[in-house]
Length: 341
Image (cartoon, rainbow, N blue to C red; front, side):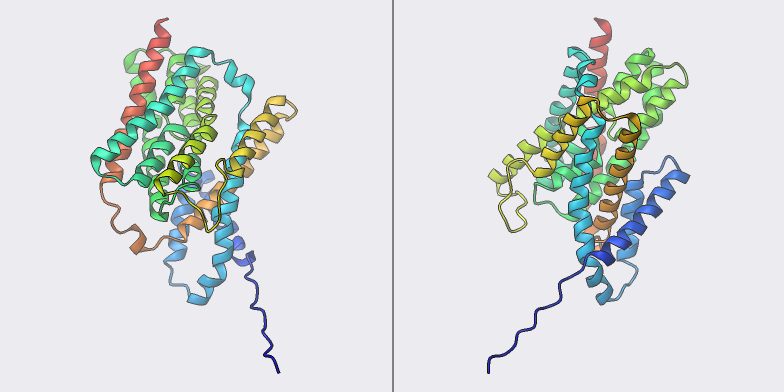
């Protein structure tokens, strides 16, 4: 009589997603209470705390499938929704000079940061995460790069933390240096948008500049979004290069040259550019995008253990500092050239 094979129970994602949702709410609440705090960084810290709280092995295994969905699928949806913050008309209104500055910051920022990282002895995947994260749009760019290269969890977590630390430090520094340099409000806004890592950090800096004289915030955010617009082509190029190096992320199956979530990003840009979405819809999409990325960071944090963080060392920190100065310098030079015209 043949043996009856019982199918193993299919893992459920609900427990892990519920815990990720709770961590997301906690991180968003903390960021609301302390505006200077990044919900993404708070979420990572909370995730690390949960992972190292001594949970039973059975509980960890139960949460695993849901955390995997959050760290992968929710992350990609969040990056795709970032496209709804972009409108082609806004980018066109920048003018060729400003658009060229934004493009130069991204291209030269990545190239220079990779060279600096190599000289410091930072591994290729870590320096690529830092270079793209600092040059384009912070944590979202780093996460997008992570989806196409074979990097380690600790490298992405380290990059997100460095983006938050150095980008936050620039919020008071950019207005101070702009004033000392004699930049007018518009030029200061251009510099903030071209130099600072995260969109939220640019908003904070632009708001501070607007306190003295209006007009900086809108310019800063638009220039920053011009850098975000280069996310899709950069990730496509990174994916091709990673494959040729044998360091592309496969997850056990062939991956498209242009990941589907980047096509979603471009589709969202196209939809926003039609003008059919009102401000309320765009604001809601931004809130959803932030929540999804926060949930993904919480899930990534749960994969971090002391052994994972061991060996990070000083090199990534030194690279982050050097990349920040390099990118800010390129941006300031570009702004000065435009202002002199």
